[in-house]
Image (cartoon, rainbow, N blue to C red; front, side):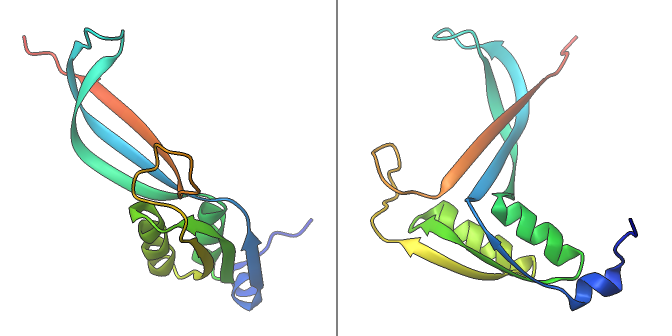
Length: 127
C-alpha cells in the first residue's frame, strides 16, 4: 500500500462526525495525601486543554492539510466554547449544534459538553 503524502491531503475534503470532547490536563506538585480518601492532593500549577474524541481526529486531519469539517454537539457552556475556539485555531470548520438545554452546572442531568479532566501530581523532595 502506498503512503499518502501532504499533497494528497491538501486535495481531500473530510467530514468528521462523532462525539466532540474537551480534555483538560492539570499538572502540579503534591506534598500530602488527602485525609478523606487515599489520593494525593495536587496544587495545580499548569492547565492544558486539548480537543478529544472526534474533535481530536478532525484537528489531526486538518493539521495534515485536509479541508476538514466536524459535525457534532456541544453544550452551551464554557467547555463547549473552548472546543469551538480550539477547532477554529486548528483550522477546522465546525458545524456544531449548540445544545441550549445545558447549563454551566453540569453536575445535574443535562447535555453538557463532554469533558475529561486528568490530574497529574509530581512529588518534590524537599530534603
